[in-house]
Length: 506
Image (cartoon, rainbow, N blue to C red; front, side, top):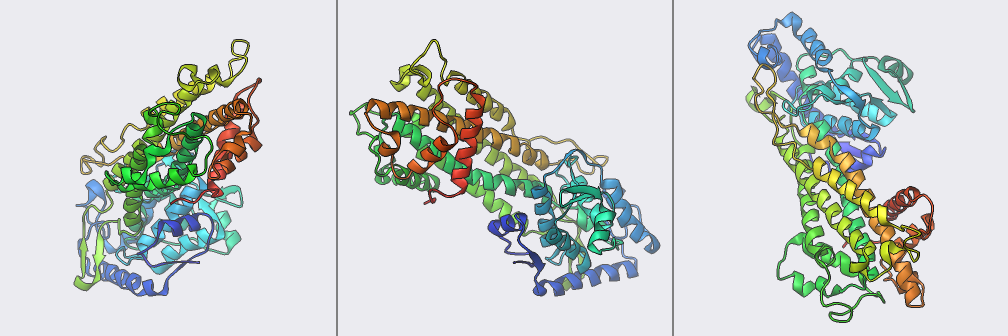
């Protein structure tokens, strides 16, 4: 069970909640929530001009709202801001959004009633997921449109999915014995101001990125053994003379994976040095790891932050308007992670080229003994090249773009949602690039084993053998026929093997 109180929610807990673990509000959070709500009610009673509570929104912030209209103001806000379009976000992304929105409301700076955030927890635990269109956020006042679609479910409007069935939210609420909530002062604004969509998509991408780093080490170590490579380049004493934490971590991972191999060599035995895509794996993969860990730090802060506007400070009875909803910290971090993951693909594709190119590998051209009649894995490298090039396009930073909104009031926006949305296809491409390398490495290892009058599995290091066997159990040595299923099969097998934890990270 995960207890929310607005602080100290970890990435691991968030992933568990996304996967279905029960989430409840920590009793310690109730006092702060109720105190901030009481402050909102005093402000309304006194008629104090407070942005979004007794005034309009954005460019309309100077328009006063009467006490009688404050409830209608909040309901209208949710409906008018639910302007998303395009394919809906995944169930996992919506679960993350509800979790993170509840957590920020639990901090006690937003002025909502406890029942409002508990409604999100009820949805999470019952498996009710609002349908949230993926496009429409510029990441300025946070993810306004996506969060408004999330908030529609609280008031019993829009559509939701439960048990695989999409229907009117009101219908699903009736099934759960819940009634729609009527929003009160500040609550519509509190539900729609924030960075929860981009942060949620970042969390999902982060989990994949950690696995991709492991997969890159596995694929690279399979390739290095197929190339009779030189592990001396990963010596700990060498790496400590340039002690970037990522390089030290990945060097340790690679040494562990290669330990006990019968296929690695010493300098001069086959060649004096390996190519950069092999020799520099700790440095390249390590730089990626550091970028991913930095992104994790940023997301952890954001998950536990108060990100709506204004924020309410009970001790001083103040409502302070600011810019905690602005998505720039997340946008830049997600762009950074996209660049890093793209570099994993760049290096992997070059290793695949070394395997299929006879001038570089010393093996039969395109890893087939019947070259000419058969093309072997020639076009597998084309596919890896195409995916790698596509990722370079997807890695173009979204965070440097801006288009003013709200009649110029919001004149610098983050486009953090775009940085987040393009991560998913980029990551899928990276998995396939690594899967292609792993397939080619296994094919090369089979040829090397045959030349050495042994079985590849018997010559491999204990750390990489389970991955070789996982791939070979999914796809045999490619000889002829349609190649595509081999590429997809090897990718899926590598992905499963990494997630099953055949090798623990250092």
